[in-house]
Length: 419
Image (cartoon, rainbow, N blue to C red; front, side, top):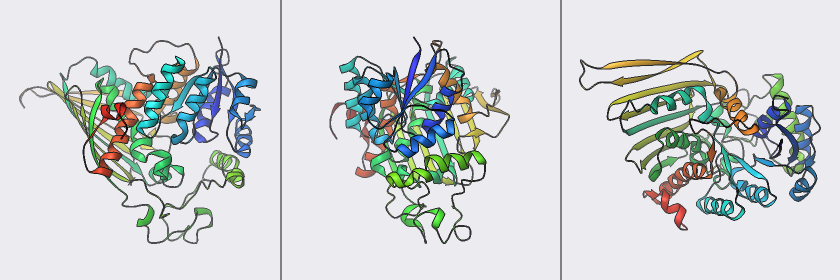
């Protein structure tokens, strides 16, 4: 049966899914039949960018009745994902939600209960599992040449373009996004959970807002009207560098602004910003591994460094990213594996992987193939369900609670009781 998709949330991420669906590549298997948003101007702009005439709705029941989708892709602000998961399941649709699955433990438990109630599975779109470089690491780990993995370190650093973006939008409100430890780090926690094939049990964390928000020595309301733009402020938002950016920001943000008051270029130094830009996390796993994780949002470069040390060897991996959709800078990348007991016996293996320059390092296109077609081959377990979504976002939720309370937090405990 042909899959009929609706998208809730007419923003940039929803546009990525929509472009793939209207491209014609999946024409025989999937189509985009409806858009949902409370902002009509934004949906009209969305259609203008797509050069399509997808039916638009501000009433979900009307959408369900008239367009009859089989699947709903949820690209709304994180804190209301659970509402649309419930709407989808109640109307007989499959729910496909962007990461993070949700933003607090109560909503996680509610989503898991909804699955049982309606007998349907929620899919969480962790596109980073599909990046060829990461998939090759997973393939290598499945050979178990490193023995039992006991120690993992992951340092993720966002630059002053991409990192700053999270502080201009609704993401900068902890209640809406859960902060970067939920909204952004859910990718990274899921990555480690998936690579290890293990379940996080306990988390401890530190976090602070050190650069953005109230730390600014000057501020305005927004970049487009700020007296400091172009001279004093190094963070000025410049969206008209290429014509594609101009069209997107004009049609789904600036021209839709009067309808709901959503300001897309808000000042990074707004004193109401309450999420962290500097974070350190420790995670203990059921199987005995320990993760040391760091995230900052103001680096001059962007990328990550990953090490995984086992009883028989060590893997070292890193990527340098460029641009907001994380295009890899190198044509080829590699990771190193070290094995051996003594220094004289040390063996180094370098494993090269071709880089993919498409969106999110090739992760998006490979995710779409699984999501939009009957493609069933998934030997690496890259498609993620609600339990994967729960374990990744609960790690971030638990980290936020640890920062707030100054104690370690049981992740499994968050599933069982109110906190």
